[in-house]
Image 1 (tube, one colour):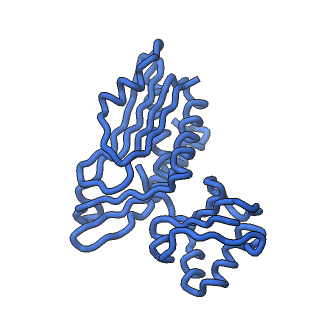
Image 2 (cartoon, rainbow over the protein chains, first blue to last red):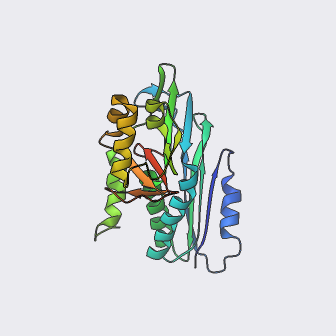
Length: 157
Length: 84
C-alpha cells in the first residue's frame, strides 16, 4: 500500500524537505521522480505581475487523492506526495510539487507524469493572471486534455 | 436545504459565491435546480450557467449529465480547471 500525502497550502515549500519526508520510512526505494511547477513570468505575451490561485476547498484534496490512488493502482508505487499552493503568487514562485517513489524508475516517471496530467485537468484549481493590462482568468488548454486523455488509451505510455 | 457554490469566472460573472435553497422547493434534479436558478434570477444567470464548458459537481464529485438531488446536497458550478 503506497503512502499518499496531499497538501493544499498558501505557504511556499522546500523540495529537499518534501523529498526526505517522501522517502522517510521506505525500505525498497530505488527511484524518485518529481516535478516542480513555477509561476510563469509571461503567458500569451502578457507580462504576469501576480497569479491568484482559487480552489474548491471541499473538493481539492479528495480529487487529488483520487488521482494518486489511480496512479498507485496502475504502477507499483511506494509513496507519492502532491503539494499545491493557493492564494497570491509572484512570477517565479513554486506552485506545485509532485513526487513519486518506486523500486524502479519506470513506475516513478510514469506515475509522476500521470498525476500531473490528471491534476491539471481534474483538480478544482483556477488561475487568474494579473498584468499591467488588467486581470483575466487563464483558459483551459486542449493540449492538457489531450495529455490526460492519452493515459486512457490502450497504448498509453 | 441545498447548498450551491460558484467558483472562479462563474462566481465573478454571477457576483455570487454561494447560496442556499430550501428543499423541496428546489428542482428535483440537477437540471431542475439550474432551471430554477435561471427562472428566479433572470437572463444574465441563464447566459452564464448555459456556457458550453460549464462543469457541475454534486457533493464534490463532477457530474456528467443530470442527476437526482437530495436534501443536504452541495452543488457547485465552475469553469474548466486550470491548476498545476
